[in-house]
Image (cartoon, one colour):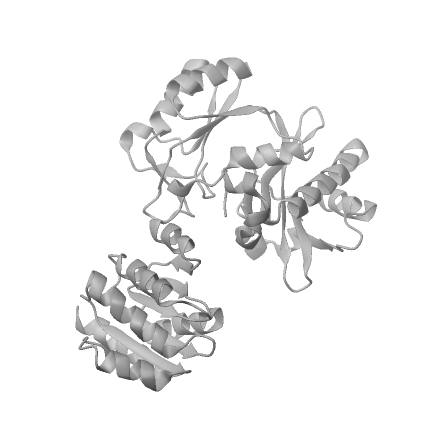
Length: 399
């Protein structure tokens, strides 16, 4: 689960990390009051969407101006003007795709005198089972570009959960960023605070880009991008309360109600699979034969008929779907349950695109019999390769 920058900064502040004073606003009137409360003389007006690259982004609407989603204001009137231009308009960034995202809230923040900018992030390193930190002197840039062009400027280290952050971790950060004296001490304390927040809140990723040094010699988190481990949200009702469903795909929201692992993609072939590994293999083989998957959908090992029906309805609600591939290898999941769920869903929502079904495993013959006797226009497949070729051919044949 992702949250907005201003929400992330509130969490960081709770754990002692240095952030600028700021206020989230939802209207021009609120923006005026916030700007007067903060006092100025310089304010940063930031669009709040779940995507990076806001400063370099562009609004689709001409009335939103040409200055991107992050702007410096030098007066209260200018704050009001920028907020009026941004609110309700669609911001397109490198991470949103061409559709962009509508800006429904703005963060008004005190401006900072910046001496230098750095990059700092923390994430779960699955290869070591530890929290890893990534730091670089190239703050304010896309870290992917830094990794590609100047990988030597990226430094990483992991923290042993048995010890937590130790003094040498702070020294590592200070050395990587060229910090000495009091700034080196601040770096050590910052890493301690961020690690505490990361572990306590079950974060999956924490990115500060940029981390700045102000002209008066203070480290400050100028941005905060945080995502949380969805499997741990039951422990954090305070984090769940921060969820902004307007930033999420409606199909993904519906899938979460049924505990379905669903991620919307940009392709034309809807997929319903049981098991994450098999789902990934299904996506890969669709691409191999020249089409693009419309989603990742894992119904899990013990899905009910109701769950399968819900999954099918979610797939068919995507207008980009031109064909559907059901690929089930029954272990815990029984093929007859899948078959009944598919039939129930088709009867409920109709079937206007080609449907290929590949069943194998527990109760496979019962499942095939149910499909065959349903009277549905279903294309049977013998294995995954056969299924992929058939659904790709069927989709191309409809164009």
